[in-house]
Length: 432
Ligand code: NAD
Image 1 (cartoon, helix red, strand yellow):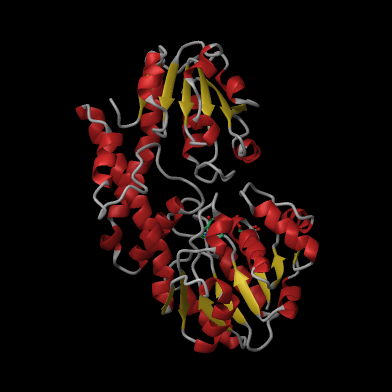
Image 2 (cartoon, rainbow, N blue to C red):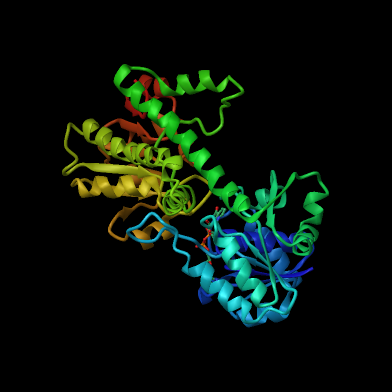
């Protein structure tokens, strides 16, 4: 099939390359000319394992190309995936819908009658019903198909999703989308067909649940911190109950990124508009617990530096919001690094992939080209993003460069006993 993908960021670029891998002819459209130039040259403008190989393969074969003209998308295909961003509005909890509205309005000026438009962006419930009217007026039909990919596993998650959700009012349009996903569905991938509001809600409900699970265990970490308990043992013990499960029960610095934080906030804002804010009032706590972990990291760093950060040197390991990604949107690591710098310490940040993005967004932080440079002469080292190269760090690797053997593990992956046995003062969130 011929299809277009409008918005080629983390979601859209991955979706475009994956659709080419499924055998479709794909045109990706973005308003960002620099991004389009890089994608056209077969380069992925962000870090996502496996995507560069997939993208260059299909750009070279001609199955996948990129451009900036939305008119060309309308001419090229009768199936269009809209993957533009829905960031948090500055100074509000709600999602900024200007990109989605602009993309649909522009696209609908150019689509042929009978075109199918697929919404993949994460949007406030009620958006699809509104856009469906706009699509119908232009002779097109809308389906809503929320996306569940995880950065770091985006290619795998797109080609082998654990479910496909389609919200549709029009069976013919739904059938077109199912045909595009035919080879995925043929492998037995569960398909959940719903109405529009349910499809929109599935996405925010899933992210709210995941955020709640993380904040739940981080709330237990807060209790452990005042009682002398060990949250990692607590999580292990409750995780053996398969009604609870082990996943997403790792206490630490909490969640960040371009999805979870803004999605739960947008959900609260939308629920407020609908008069059901009480139903998701708990998400306010979830968000607050998450933010408190960041403040707690700063406090622990201060304690380890003798109750003042002023004039201290702090080595920061991690900038991305999670490993295997260079995404720094709402990154807990950079938030902590910035707060520590504001408290008068000299920070040096190192991340294997996110340095470019971090430097653009936090130009006043200092950056180091390696783990050892970041930790050079440090009074305390903070482990904030659990990249494999940080997880495998040994006390000896750092012992000769730091000023004081102080390690603060924000991700609960280093072995406290091992570090302490090597003479380090070791602290972690939620552990004695
Ligand atoms: P992103 O910021 O990386 O990408 C959005 C892209 O859309 C940008 O390249 C931007 O230039 C482009 N764009 C904006 N307006 C446009 C227009 N009018 N026409 C064409 N292109 C336009 O964002 P993202 O992370 O890819 O997220 C996109 C959407 O997908 C969001 O709603 C997000 O919540 C959702 N989502 C993201 C992920 C993820 O892991 N990143 C996962 C699931 C869902």
